[in-house]
Amino acid sequence: MAAAREPAGFWPEILAGACCALLFALWRVGYPATPAAMIAPLAAFLLVGAGIWQRRIRLVLALRESVFLPQSRYKHWFTGRISGAILAVVEAGAITLGVFHFALGAHGAELLLAAALGLCTLAAVAALRRIAARELRPEFAVSASAWVAAGVALPFCLVHFWMQQNILPPPAYLDAGSFAQVLNAALQELPARRDGMIEALSALQLLEAAIRWMLKSLNRIWGGAALLFVYNALIFMAIGRFFGDIATTFNLVRLRA
Image 1 (cartoon, one colour):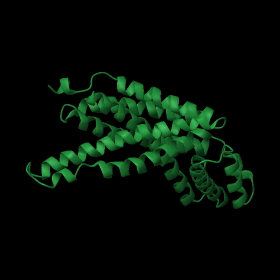
Image 2 (cartoon, rainbow, N blue to C red):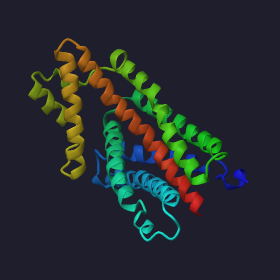
Image 3 (tube, rainbow, N blue to C red):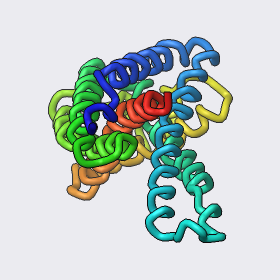
Image 4 (cartoon, rainbow, N blue to C red):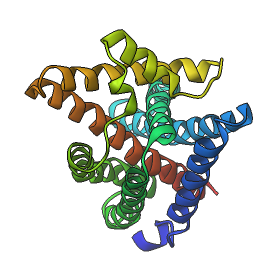
């Protein structure tokens, strides 16, 4: 019976991987040339947010049924829709911003590492949802597997940090001079746009430039290296969540069909 309830095959993960790659490529190539590429982060935000929202609703409804009696007058107030919408906006916004900021300036080696992370995350989602389906209802097996698969990003964070310290060239803006000049040069590397997205990207660009300047100027102090590692770890965890949450969305849509 458990196998019959489980979503068969790997098509949700395959579709999610193709969708992520398409959005990533459209943004990286298209945004410097045309504002029409803004469709990529908008679509990513909706796809990631939909999975987060659905997971929250299912969790709240399951808790509601275990807490309230069937005749309760108050249980219909607890649907998870409002809290789910808040979580979806905050988490999907942060994930989308981190991923698409990374996409604009990443080196080829970083792109290959991100692609490997995406493939491993999707494989983990597919495997874990099948394992969890032996013990959990299908919609919770999908949700649980997506969260566990986020841990796949951790070793990739270490690899990426090592690459930055030993392989990848430092950003050119670090040679601009003073702290203010470095920040200004970092902003100049972003596309010349005037929209809401570029303002958000500028904030991340300034944060990364400030951390890198501190790491270079203060003789590579341990605290600066730790900040850079944490920042890049969050970016790579966002990439993992990007793939995992979109796969969750496709899985939940399939379950509802």
